[in-house]
Length: 439
Image 1: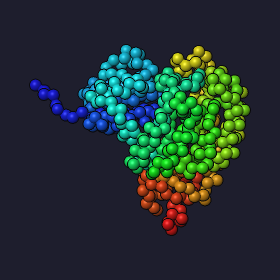
Image 2: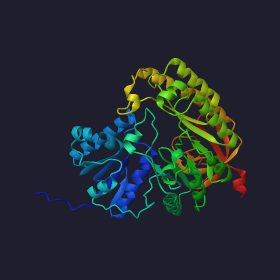
Image 3: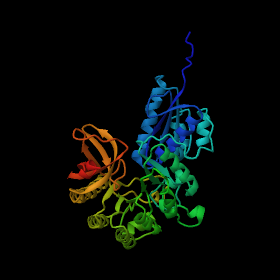
Image 4: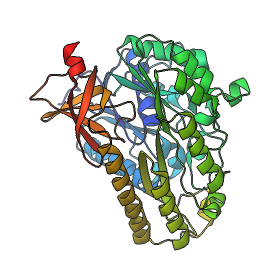
């Protein structure tokens, strides 16, 4: 007769999707640890929590494949329990329960206390900022708001994440101080919409005031802004960027398209003229600024003329960083009522054309950096190289600086002064500056 083993439960948290999901997983792990649970991130564990993404088709497929993989492991006896949380679960819970009923329980994006209870842990309100970070020790994501009030036609985020809710400045500062005390040097501010920060709590856009509070946190050297919405951008943020060396000259501002009739159908609340003027203002006020944007091609009704206009605009604007996605037809969004009339191969071809233009722009901008010296944070060692980033680059999505590890030793998580010696489309190569060697 088999006796049930008394092995201790180990909870494995698996994160899919964006940096906001990374943050949510870290909060979950912090809560579990505070309840005395053994918790790991994407390692072996007999209890699995999958934090899913439900944003676009590719992400949904990856989430479902991951759930099915772990269900197979459960059937094989390699794991005991599987719980599913996050955006896919929020959006499609009834369908998932019907299609994959063997999952122990499904939870939405706002059901952390219920998930903790199912895992035998208590939700502790007092744990502001207590997270188990999963990123390299030198940087961490800092979520300053949840949800979104924007009506963009293509986006399912408000369905999954609800209305915009800003986190109070004092709570964010406490969290930043705790991160800094653990060695975090770079804070990457994230939200569905940074531009809207503070409107619900303080009745005004308060991102600049939040930055003023965060620059006072000892140990933090870089503060980076991700996911700002173009309409209503608070221009006083640019003053802080100019005045405070800790605030990186970097802004991630997804613009999605530039053709007026596509912008109108997308319900973006702006025009080509307003968008172009905003970018000119950014460049005028902060000439050093690196602008990252993302675009969508193949949106319903996008004609060849619309696409050519977008291509020309990308050529003219010379964005330092740019990503391009093909349109995904999402249920319950406003655009779902439109006919998804651009064929998949045309969408993909258009995305490739945009990225080809961007690749050339990026190569040219990188060539201009040869001979220049930058402050670089060293994220990791990979093969023969130490891999770092300048203040103009965000982790995972932007350029990296590679330094030959056979010639010099650098400490991961620390800053170094690097002179650029070579440049490719999306990578820079450098060596430790003589300035650093002498000091």
